[in-house]
Image (tube, rainbow over all chains, first blue to last red; front, side, top):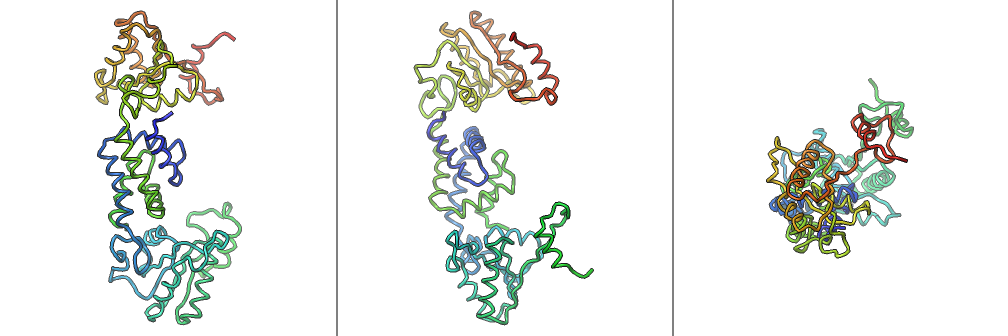
Amino acid sequence: MFAPPIQRLIAEFAKLPGIGQRTAQRLALHVLRGSDEHASQLASAIAEVKAQIRPCQICFNLADQPTCHICRDARRDDSVICVVEDPADVISMERTHEFHGRYHVLGGSLSPLDGVDPEDLRLPELFRRLRDGQVGELIVATNPTTSGEATALHVAREVRELAPSVRVTRLAAGLSVGADLEYTDEVTLGRALLGRREL
Amino acid sequence: MFAPPIQRLIAEFAKLPGIGQRTAQRLALHVLRGSDEHASQLASAIAEVKAQIRPCQICFNLADQPTCHICRDARRDDSVICVVEDPADVISMERTHEFHGRYHVLGGSLSPLDGVDPEDLRLPELFRRLRDGQVGELIVATNPTTSGEATALHVAREVRELAPSVRVTRLAAGLSVGADLEYTDEVTLGRALLGRREL
């Protein structure tokens, strides 16, 4: 129903997460309706991001220089490293404004069924960072999912062996702020109970 | 929080309709995570669509050749032209599989307050198509909105003057298939009543 170049663009948009066929069509028609300039800005932004963004050589966060802006920031606390699965998790942590240490992006979580084994994650690079003795705490902020938990346990076990002086912690599990007990699943509620704190 | 090339891509994605800041960020990170090949396919599909797609010289539908695939199709009925506002409306009409005539894309609808006057639409081109006497019916399928209705009335008036032998019709207004009377607005229900048909 569409000319081939339009069909191709719709198919490319539809490959993006959360974009269905109908939305992809709307986006493609929007690009067609818009100015040539806007379209070429979008196209070049896509090309540039791939050309210029590389993993940080220290923490594997996204960077447009050899190291990322957090690793370059002298004001950050070198004694704490927060271990996350993905670069998007760094953004989420930064949004809290509660963490002032460094990061380490693993690049995923252990999931043997999906073929993700320890050697597929940036674990050797993490352990190497612990070797110089500067790090006192490792906050393992992998997702509270089966594979995230498995990854956290694996990291904790390895660190105990390689750098026993490093404290390994995990983010608290419990109720979301603003949540309703009635609608909270029993596993989360159970964790919140186990992790209860003195008032 | 993001390196400039990522921020630029997020900003470009956020300009697309229905894409908010959060979705734009997810799309940008998806592009970053994906292969270079996928990103360059998306970028080149955007560039190509702008380079290759032009309005059809006859009906102003989207075309990758001087005329669109519908105008080129010898099996279509030359005696009926369906007038629509946008190329997306051609797709909607084609999906019904009920229309086998030609189209004419006006490129919008009359809306003096937004600065859209008759001379901003492809009306002279439409009237020129009526001149050779081949067309017997003009189905005005502009949207059932204030500006769509105003456009339809304007077209009907002009056609009556320029080509009085051409029948000008309008799509039926009434209940959506599967709709519920209880939840149908009174204007639509009123139109459905006025347009009632013998069973």
